[in-house]
Amino acid sequence: MFLFRFFRWLLGYVRFTAEGGFPERFINLCTNNGIVIWNIKSCSGVLYANTSINGYRNIRPVAKKSGMRVRIFRRYGLPFFLHKYRKRVGLLLGLAAFLAIITLLSGMIWNIRVIGNEKVRDDIIINAFAQSGVYVGVSKKSLDSQQVEKAALNKLDSLLWVSLNIDGCTAVIEVREKIDAPPVEDDTSPSNIIAAQAGQIVVLEPYEGTAVVNVGTAVNKGDLIIGSVTENKDGTVDFQHARGYVVARIEQKIEAKQSSAEKSAVYSGVRKHFTLHFFGVNIPIGPCIEPKEKYEVYDSKTWLEIQGIKLPLSVTRRHFLIYDEKDRQMSAEQAQLRVTESFINEASAKLKAAKLLNESIELLKTDKSVAVAGHFVCNKNIGLEKPLQVEKGG
Image 1 (cartoon, helix red, strand yellow):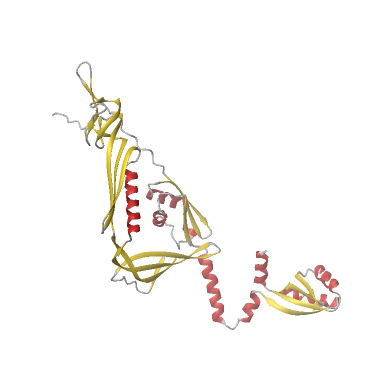
Image 2 (tube, one colour):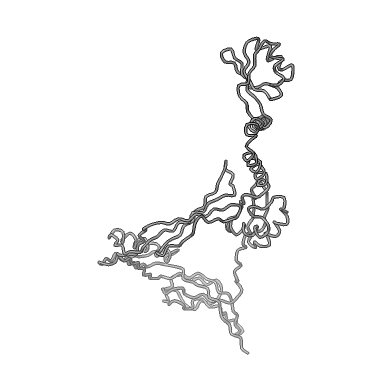
């Protein structure tokens, strides 16, 4: 439907009125004589309809036979527009230049989109393709997809496969990332199991190697628990990769402290700088002057879009947020909430996978600070593998 309307506008058409006589005979004669009319309406005995320019030229004999009087009601289309402005050469040249620019731009890449990536950033992939010949403003006819894909893949070691597809004026880059193989643990080299922290052994299950302590023994951090050296019946020794399960009763002290006063940023103003991007060309709008005061920088980019299609025109706004650091006095509730959050995070990390046996938590307050101190007794796996350093004699 849109295509028909466009061609009718391109060739030009008129809307006319016909009155008097016999409207039904008039319409039938137009059909029999090959005169196409459409959008027919009747209002107060007057017939309104559309026809082409040639159709209107041939319509008068038909109107005379049916007793109808026809007049042009309105003209539409490019021929009438050009005729109206035929003496304005500059306007016509501008229109011609506009059409030429649109035709030229339609053969270029306006936008680049990446799909299928999770770990590798879009800008890294787009930069690799730019070095391979795909960038905003390049002619679509000059692109050899297979050659570009091969060159870009050689620059992206973390990708397994890439594909370049042209959708209108958009270059769609589809990628597949490599899946890293899980690390293979070396379970053949000699190693000992030592204590990761001090405690009293409550469970000791050596799978390979020789236990050098017993259940109930107190160990310090770094003490040997399961050794890699195994003595044979003939007096020789073997070095093994020690394995085992070691649980100890440990005591863990955790403390978090929060000062009542803290440095706080007080923002006093903002400066903005704009940069226009057109087909990969950066055009700064005015000088970019950095503030002499302390500041934070935030960038935001806005693309011009028409019906969801991103055009090669965008604006980057750079915001300089000016601030000054000042001491801020927190309330007792704020300080207590802050220190409690820090204490919970540290306790969760240090007591992970531990079985809690006993706990004691105390809140300590002074005029300048708030602290939370905790004493925990729990059972925890403290076995830590440590490779054995074997010195070879000369």
